[in-house]
Length: 64
Image (cartoon, rainbow, N blue to C red; front, side):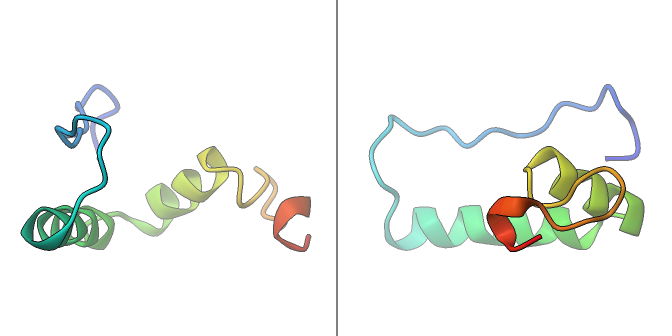
């Protein structure tokens, strides 16, 4: 996450929904990754997701 060239681990799915242990494992990996983010990385992730604008305002779709 600190290295812009770092590859993100993509879940290996066949397009079918995940259940049980697969879903729990993916959830654990996401929480681990998010927990290691700096505030800046976390905010950038929210901007890239379209939740916040680059200037820090909530996107219209989310009540901004």
